[in-house]
Length: 639
Image (cartoon, one colour):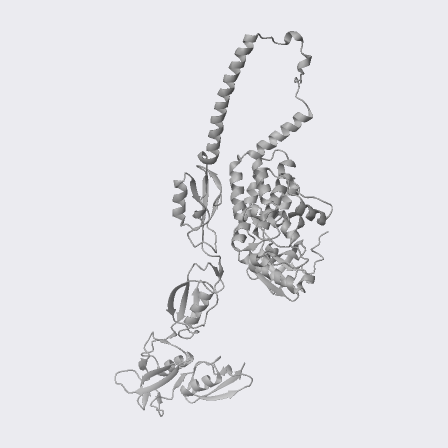
C-alpha cells in the first residue's frame, strides 16, 4: 500500500516555498518527506513534527534546538540542516536530501559485516560524532537507522533531533528517557543523564551488531532489554560469531564499559582506536576469514576422502618402535638442544614481530596536522615516511581557508609506513547568504556585512539614475548568493547621477532634460555675439559631475534677438528675450504632482491638475513632443 497517497501533506507547499512530493519515513517525533525547494529548485528532505507534539512547548523547543544544533555542525559526514520553519500548525526542518540506504538496510541485506568492513564504516560515523562532541553536543540516538549511505558510498549521520548541548544534557526531565533502548548506556537508563561517552557506548553496541548481526542484549520487552544493559556487560563479539579478531572484541568491550570513565573519552578517541585496529587488519582480511569459515564448515559437515582418524591402541605390536637406553638418552639430549634452539628462534621472531607491529611497520597520523598550513602538513607527513596526496577542499567553520581541515586516515590513526594519507584542505567557513544592503548608507552596509560574519573587500563608486548619492548600489557577490564568509564582499556606492554635457544644445531642451532627472534648474539668459541663439553657453555643475535628485543646476543660455527673420516666418520675443516657437515638453509621468507642476511651470507651460486618489502623475497630455510656450499641460493624478 502506498501510504503517501493518503498523507494530507503530500502535494502541499509549506511556507510558500517547499512542495511536499512524497513521504520517506515516520518516526516517534516526526515524519520525513521528500520535497522540492521551489525558490532554489532543489530536492530537500522535510522533517515535520507530529501535530500532537507540536502542541507541547518542551518538544517544540527541543525540535527547534535540533535545527540550531545540527546547523552548527559543518562536516562531510553529517546530514546538513538548511532551515527551520513554521507553517500554521506545522513545525518543520529543511535538511539535505541523501539519496541511498540506511546502514540498517545494508545490515539486513548482508546479515552481518566482516570485521574490517565494519571498522571502515564506523570511522566516518565516529568522525561525525566527533565533530558534534567537539561542539559540545551529544547525539543520544546512535543506531544503524540514523546512518545513511549514499549511492557512491559516502556515510552520513542523520537525526541530531535528540542532540542537546552537553551542559543541558546533564539536566533530566523526570520520567523521560530519550533514545532507542537497545543502544542506551546504563547511566541513561538509571538516571537519564547522557554525555559524549553515552554516544561512545551506543557506537560500541552498533559495532557489536555490525560484526555479529544481532544486538548484545535481547529480550521480549524493552524493559527487559533495559534491565540487561544495567545489570549485564556486553559480551565480546567473538563469543557470538567465532573468528572475530581480539582487537574488535577489545574495542567493543572498552566502549561499552559500565563505568563511563573507562570508555574512550569521546568519539574522537574511539575513532583513533578504531582506525588503528582497522589499519592493523590486512585489506583482504574479511575475504580470507569468509573462505576459512566456508572451508571449516565443509570439513565439519563431511570429512575429506581417504582420511582416517587412527587410535594408537589399534596398531599391531610390530609397528611399535623400540629403542635402547642409550638411544633414549641421546634422543633426550638431542631433544633438549632442539627445544632450546627452537625457543631462541621463536623468541627472536616474536621480538621482531612486536617491533614490526609497534615501531617498524606503523606510525600515527599526527593530530597536530589539523589546522596546519597545507604545505607544512605535507612536509610533516613526508618526513615521517608517509605518502601524501591532497583531496578536494571542504568548507569548515573550525579551520581557516588553506589549512588542513581533515585527513584520511584521520588524525591520530595508526598507519603503515609508506601508506598514503590524504589531506583535505579547508575552503573556508560554510557558505551563507550575502545580505541585501542596497540603498543603505555605506557605514550601515559595512556594519550589516560584519554582523553576518563577512569580510569586507573593496569599496568602489558608480553613477546611478535610481540610487541616491552615497547610498549602496549593490555588492559583489550580489545579495542572496551563498558565499563563504572568508571570501570578501565588495561594495559599490552611488556617486549619484552623472551630469550630462549640455554645451551648445537647445536651452529649453537642456532644461527639460535636467528637470526630468529630478534636478532643480535655474536658467540665466545672456547675450553673446557669435554664438547660436537659445543654446547653452555654460553649465554648473560641469559634465560628468555626480548629482542627486533635488540638486540645483544653473544653465546660461544665449539670448535671442527680439526680431528673428526665418524666411517666410518671423518670431517675436517673449519677456525673457526668448522666442515664442514650440519648445520640448518634459514627460513627468510617475513623478509627484508637486514636482511635475513645478518642473512644467519652470519650463514655461501652464498646468491643469485633474483626478484624485493619489499624489503621483498617472497620465500627462501632451506627454512628449513640443508645444508653444504658455501651453496648458494637463496632468492626471493617481496612485
